Length: 389
Image (cartoon, rainbow, N blue to C red; front, side, top):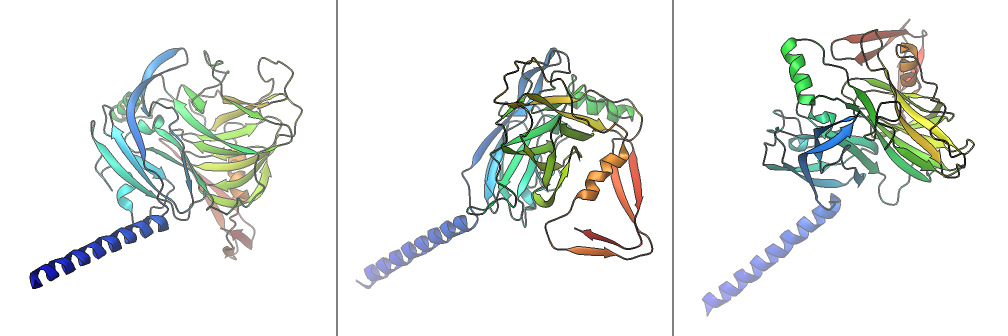
């Protein structure tokens, strides 16, 4: 009889323990805002650009890759299945990953690469980030085609610190090489020289109608007159800093790299490789078609692709039946360093952290990187300057 009582008591304790464990795990999942898991397949997919077809590495067959939509504070589980010929990792660019370096995606640093035929579980923890970030492959040059946006919305119940846009869209700037990108970097490493320049730049996977065989498929963003729109601009290009603008329209910069800024108006932006910039744009011009364009800032005179990637900002009320826009945005010249650095000078954080520079003189240093060169720009400041970081 005593034995039966002890067994029943033990069974009750085990049941209570299981219930407590389940409850704890459930509460932790709520606290971490776990979202439904996502499955990605890395594989080769055939794409045609610049009058020729080739196979490129993609996620789920898409170029650019899938967009991740999360809220501030979410935790996302992503299963990556590698069906390609190369090792691969995925890096969550700009995501801090507090206490979780093992899912950062740095090959041979925080993880071994995902070998062909294998899979890996990433746990992506979003903490303080809010705005636009991006993800990309972190193995060799596979990131040239394996990349995509990350949209981090405010927490549920919160709102943007700027007027709510009527709609929003991500614009991913990327490089396109006619040759296999792995051969491009391999040749450069063997020869000890610079890599070949990209054969084209793209906006959301399309070079735009200034390139051969590229008019069909040029990306179009349809807008309604007098409405406000949010553009999330991501530079996934391998090396080049890019100027970007929309013909006839002003841009209001409101965010950068997963954080909000004090808004400022400009006719163009300069976005560096790996950088993201959020801009508001008012559809306040006569209905028609207007070019969105991106062209490189190079800083020095060397061989490069100087044809702008284009997309079309098209009013839904356009009745002109025009074949294509007539004007490109007035972007700075390719070697205009003053215009490139001016955007940086305008940037101010919304955080109330002020750094006083009270020396007799001070220098602000801007580093602009290229594959084989480093451009160093020094700006002399007044004797007393105030910067908000």
